[in-house]
Image (cartoon, rainbow, N blue to C red):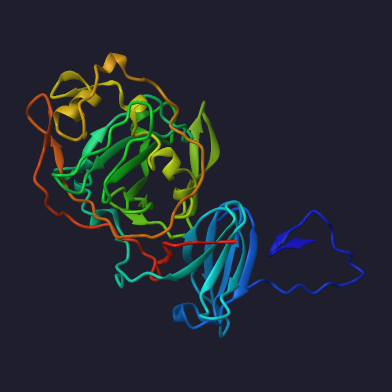
Length: 381
């Protein structure tokens, strides 16, 4: 009759006068994942920050998280680990460690607290990230470079712009011809979305959202910023994501279009290790001509000339070209390490991309207060 607070397919018998008790927390399919497979109320000593929290796992989507309900108030969700296949949770009888049973791999993990004490929150506004020196024109800071891809993933008719940056002038991207590239920790990608509210009027273009991905030493995290009504700045979307309903004029008629601002969890559904973390930054997608100072150049050749790539690249004509901006999804998010958007390169007045010395214009930080990591030595079942 009900699943959580949502009405189910069965109709309640009015004669029985059911009295429903609402849940203190709902794990929804659309916003979070697939379904909770295992869970326990943690009362151990090895993770004192989680004492009294209910810890649960999503077998298919791989989220391991914790919530607390005390004095009628439910806490915000604490995301602990991302690894699909966790079927059961338990407590080690000797040391109170939290145990995670990975059914797919046949491994028993122990979870321990991250030594890092940094708890810096994500910037609440796009203007505070240091990505753009001028939001009105979307001019990036020196070192944050625009790039283009061959085939863009469909996003409800939105027009997209993209930028990237490396953390240090001495670091390089690991180029591979037919496989995902490798990126140093601190690499940042930015994707900006705009949408015409009148499909026949180009002046109706509105800024909708700007997404940021930050590569860490062992994974990746993301943040989404929603542009305000005045189009002057964008606000950080809550960790669980958000929605908006847009009025789109098409062929003289108004239709409602729901726009989904992804949660920080959703960023990790497809941006994973197996896909190279970023779906469009690879040989087949970047192998195209672009304009630099009104001169047509091959984008990969320009990246090599600017010193981005860790090896010489063959003639672009011999490299793969064209790919879908989408990859198979699996999650491999574990330890989160803070990254920053540091300018490295800018478009110069010449016909090439020019590397610039490292400098700081602001930081992007993970907003989880209790990052945890798995221990390096798993114990097999």
